Length: 141
Image (cartoon, rainbow, N blue to C red):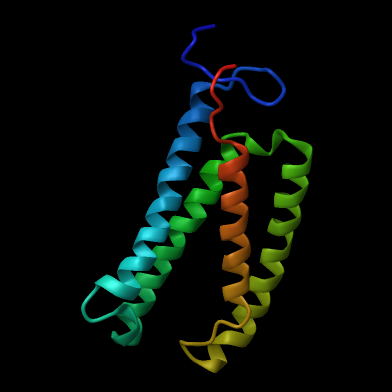
């Protein structure tokens, strides 16, 4: 095998596709953080001061970045490690429950209500960080 490839924890060489997904997920996760900073501190006026429809579009697209980062990191095959897989799988099993409750409870509370969906997104973000760190390419020893 060429020296440019790295070894996984079990000693097998990762595929180029898996590496591509990891890189795409890492870049998208960075873009998620950057878009959040943009919406909060750089955009004039800040997204929080926009009309409801425009604010909803900004926020939904921002969250789509998080979803695509998590999916790319998962497709990269990172959760092959037993502990990582169990941790991420457990976290991801919680999020649908939170989103279902949010679907029924939050609309009646208005656009600012996020008591159920916000924790679900934090769990997804945590899963993305775990996948990012667990799947980072390792230098050949």
